[in-house]
Image (cartoon, rainbow, N blue to C red; front, side):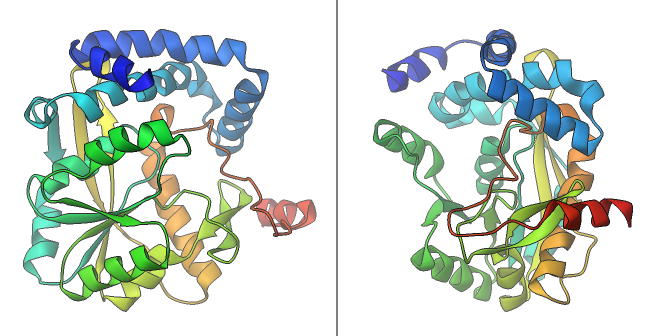
Length: 288
């Protein structure tokens, strides 16, 4: 049913879909106390609570626009996107080194890989949806020409490592909570968050260049502007220090468009089998 709905919605203009999404965002916010509480708490912790009304609308847009991103013809989707600072990417590709694109849950992150794949082959790590009915839709939307999928397991990690060794680019979501044993505790907006170590390991393994990127959602459904930003940190030291460096880069990226971050995501959840740092530890970090 949901697949049919998405295909139906995909024929409508993007401004209309974003208008519908704004309404959906407010409906969900008002209807769900837990959703409302998490969004407010996460935004307040990060210092962006003043953007709450815009973030509520943007969160709804992020859902409804998936019908357009996943189901509309690729050439139609491409007409609604433009890039800023592509020369940074082209320089990295021309160097022959691998490239690790880090794309957080900011703006329309689903369109980023599609647009990169219009210019070069890209392999992205993919975690199947929990609802089996959505699997054909999502996999079909993501696995397009030049866009290859690597499963979120050891087999997928080996695929990504091989790509980097060949000088090919890969893409990852760095702010997704990993499973036990796949991450470390690292500060994210003043609180310890279980953070994946894979991006740093892959970048070092392949001597790859790291580029952070996101697709800014333009006002009134005018489309998307994809930003490519240099990674200014160094991936040295312990795994925790490397994870903190990546989180710091994500914080700066989010600060560019704070209303468009996925604040309702449970970034601070504790995977089964782990013990979170004590509140005193977080408090000492905030005081430092």
